[in-house]
Length: 409
Length: 229
Image (cartoon, rainbow over all chains, first blue to last red; front, side):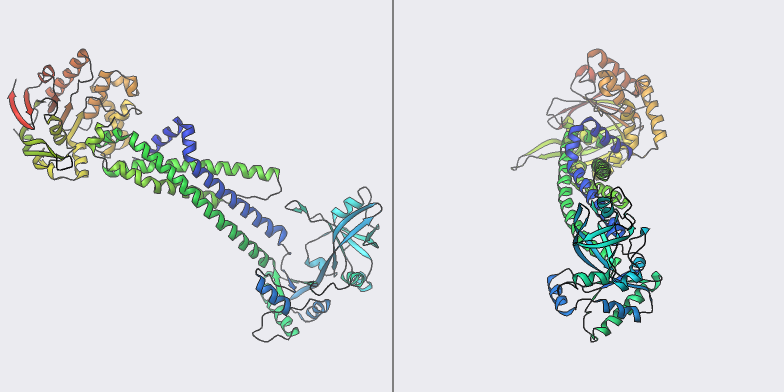
């Protein structure tokens, strides 16, 4: 009962390859787009969780601003939230009980030079010694910024591999001098390679003591965020409690009333991935809309080809009815045929998308990862489209009068 | 003897729109017992095709009643008629009406597919039916690989595979040369001798002459009904 219509549909596909391709083009494109978009989102999600929004395990930051996605909140926060300071960090460091390490970091962009080589706009990060436990950069050679460096406001630097490779391509950079904004710093340590995010290197940095940064360049303009305060907890179980503790302490320090909004931000890896999820949710919604339009067009083309098939095979339908096929037998035959057609279109789309994904991953830095769910969803949707748009032609076939159908040429 | 076919005052009116109605059948009363070999004759437009469609359960009468094998089929709905066609009637058509893309075996299997016979039994019975019409060596040929006579033999095998109570042959030799026609008529004779009831619809006298009873239709009514053997 099932095998026959499936065989007929597949045979028809084989015997009219170009026509089948054109018929199924809408479905193929829909599935291709659907899987493509889902693969990009999935790939970027994983990528962001791993590389962009990865603050390290059990780490969160106290910052001037929370994650803000609209202009009104932004203006309010600018008025309400004071710039963060090193004193805020010290305040938390003294009072927090659930924090294993508390540190702070602040940024500037400066040119870095050594000999005749120079690099423009390197990220200069002023950091506390404790940040070695909090942020994700690891020591590959030499040492991190030490407590004594911090206290003495020493002119020392811990540098990323991009800096060492460009300024000291042939010699050991440890102990060498680099000039940041024209001021000499001694390299005391080199970081492990971080890699790149979307083709942008993440190793183009120089860390110096936060005290040194503030001494040389000041605390920056009033609209600046000030340092980010990093806090690492001993285990993931106390993360939520520790964030509550930090919030309570900061509110007390800011003398906030019970129903005031926080005059600072608390950011964990999760808050960043949530932000990405929001953005991707928007992209996905648009993609779903576009794909739906494609699917409807694809479905209508299938309906059209099935109507043509019913007309072409009127006599066959008459013969089958004369031999005892009931309405539902004919209905089923054409429904199965339509859904086999569209499922084959879905399969072609899936294969094309998998091929394209593999190609993109192999040749570009764009991260793509095809979720199995996307494949299952697309196949299910394409079958459903065939079933839905097959209903009308199949009913038309099933309702044919056997006498008239047998008379057809 | 039990009647296989009994019609009572069958009318068939085709509404052609604009208040024009064509009365294709005007009160046909017909009785055909089991194991009869009868021919229905008549010129085109006489109503013989309409009568054949009614007897074959492809269509329902406008008025009157029709019993096939003691079942009142004139009152049945589409799906019940499909069931009766499958169980009681074997059709042999002038144009063979085989599915062009299917093999001889698959064509013969079709009636068994629609009554839900399991696949293995289906193939076995279809192969037997083809062997009975001397087509055992052609089971995997498609219709376009067969001669006209061979196609009609496949069609006969298909008509008989479900052991129907009535074999309805509509101009079975209309598309065949005279030698092949004779061959097919011999087959029908043999089937009749094996106990099958055959109703032959034709406008050719020498074909109708094979039957044992000739029913002539004119203007939607039975003109004459005589036993020839």
